[in-house]
Length: 208
Image (cartoon, rainbow, N blue to C red; front, top):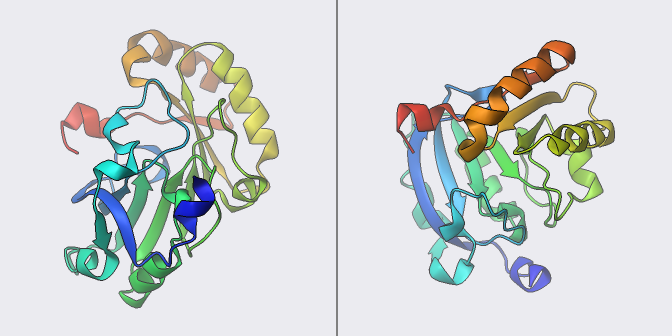
């Protein structure tokens, strides 16, 4: 499936939604951004909060050129997210955004073919399908979701694979387990200060 999806020219993409909001997670928390969520995912985390994004057939192809007119001129940062956006050829989308002088962020599990030009890559690896090696070189931010205690070991193993020595390391409680896991994450970060805590602040703020 991956190769068949990727072979298109990227001028049309199965966009699930696009919207203006505040970045709620990770290094750029609090930043006004325009989000483009592309449908289709090959990872399928059981705790995913956007399961409706998994099936690309549910989201009709949208012309990239038609999509870009919705991005406000005064907004500098555009976040490409999913689903898993790297299932698609992102060269055309990112080239057009660069023509618009936008700062482009990618949120990915790192499972799909590398394409496009990004100013920031947030890599969020998952146990059931690990990232391709090149994403460990591109990551400006490694964000590991903590659902149970074994995820701390997974996070450390993933951090050792990152090739960018300036990469920011984040541990984020899985939303449904936040009351249980957040105190453990706090203790872990206090003992391992190379890590920081990421919270889904957009959910507390009740915004997209």
